[in-house]
Image (cartoon, rainbow, N blue to C red; front, side, top):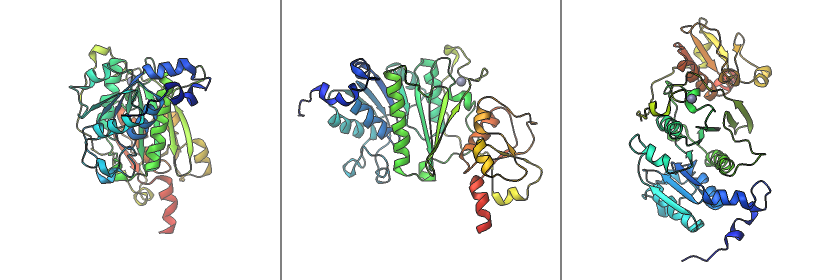
Amino acid sequence: MHKTINKSERYKRQIVLPEIGEAGQARINAASVLVIGAGGLGCPVLLYLAAAGVGHIGIVDFDSVDETNLQRQILFNINDIGANKAQAAAAHLHVLNPDITIEAFSVALDNSNVEELFNRFDLVIDGTDNFATKFLINDAAVKTSTPFIYGSILGFDGQVSVFGVPDEPCYRCLFPESPKGHIPNCAEAGVIGAVAGMIGTVQAMEAIKMIAPHDSFQPLAGRLLTVDMHSMQTRVLTLSKNPDCPVCSKNKEDIILEHTSPMCSIIPEISVDQVQHKNDARLIDVRERDEWDVGHIDGADHIALSWLMAGNVPDIDKDQGIILYCQKGMRSLQAAQYLAGLGFSNLRNMTGGYEQWLGLGDV
Ligand SMILES: [Zn+2]
């Protein structure tokens, strides 16, 4: 039993916003959103969307809650340990908002179920931490014309974008093939809960903007938000559609959905120490202009990630040795994956980035 709550009371604080109003609230109540993964990103997304009154929420997660999850997966508590995440999340959200429909899918998303699931929802939220599933989500989103809110975190860096919107770039426009670099997941790389919380919250906000559009809203379709939570430096990079994209340039019926096992083959890393003694490779700094201006490695070339991802491919021989660096190593890995997808074959990522380089003098 729950107390009967007057719906207009529950949503009063958002209905009063001129950008939302009664019409926006009606859209939110009528919307259906599928959240893939009830983890560090999925938990804040689910809490905010259920609280806002999204009328139908689906949760896909085959995993069960363990003690190491509690530090960031804020829907769960010690009583949930061992329970399936999708079911435990659904139970908690039902207490928060009994007026909405919540469906738990205790399955792993794969090519046998993805299309059917996506066809049942207006919007998908990517709360996953592996590339294989992100690719599957992207490909199914394009095939079924279901936009998805992408989110990812690594250390103190986070990113959000909206992909799968017709005529806008998709995730594969950025990364045509499964990445050849090893991207550590949270278990390997470590994560602070608030970093996941911040990115998940941005994803929830993007979802609301997509569900209840307003002239003043600019969803992140065609743009990539990056946040470095060391400094709270945020950037919004403009993305361009790749006319040769292996997914969104095709007819929808020709898109084949595949779920490859997580790829961990390597874009080789190279240490700062090795870079100092390596003279035959081109060293490229992919940070933005203001960062480059503050300081950079002597002899490096500057090709900002934002410039690269806007479709400006450097005029460099594809088998030329290239070492990429950024501030800490994440953006340069992204640049390396992008270039690898374009056929560059001799790429290395400088571990720890410019900060590691600067730290050399101290050791
Ligand atoms: Zn594409």
